[in-house]
Image 1 (cartoon, one colour):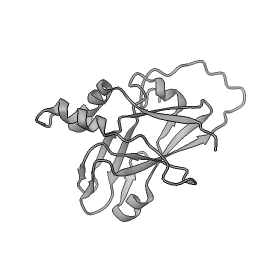
Image 2 (image 1 turned 45 degrees about the vertical axis):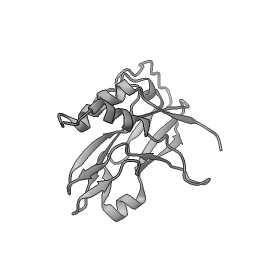
Image 3 (image 1 turned 120 degrees about the horizontal axis):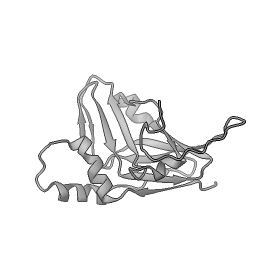
Image 4 (image 1 turned 60 degrees about the vertical axis):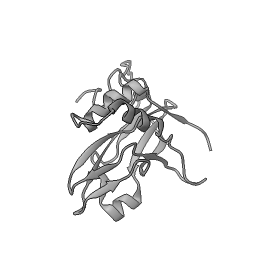
Amino acid sequence: MRKVAKFSKVSFEQFVEDCKGILGDVYIENKMEYLSEKYKNINIPKRSTACSAGHDISTPFNIKMTPHQSITIPTGLRCEMDRDYVMLIFPRSSLGIKKGMTIANTVPVVDADYTYADNEGHIFICIKNNGEDMLELEEGDKIVQAVFVPFGVADEEEITTERTGGIGSTGK
């Protein structure tokens, strides 16, 4: 199998900045110590078996979601990949079937140049609890899987624009 990508962590500073969205103004005693521990425990994605296509991505936090609630999770991860590949993110089947969890924007597409965005290419996952019961995820639970897919482009394209921003930055 050809190796086309490499996962790594974003910087601790970027992780802290992006966690403001999930933590908001919630009071946490020793917040920096708490985030430092979460950052230290981030799992680098890997495949579970030799024939697995998906690299499992885990949540760095304990999460409790009410029915029909959505939440955006900063994973603490970034990914460098070959320019002619794209990373597609899918929910783990077991969470969808057993718990009603979906990804809010269906199949997130992570382009190769996202790695160099202003936010260090920080990968966020927006999940939704479509079930009728509380959805509880524990720190380290595998929640989604990333699959690398080669892609082609249309004839006569000349694109010179370079990405600078993060999610949604390439226009409407």
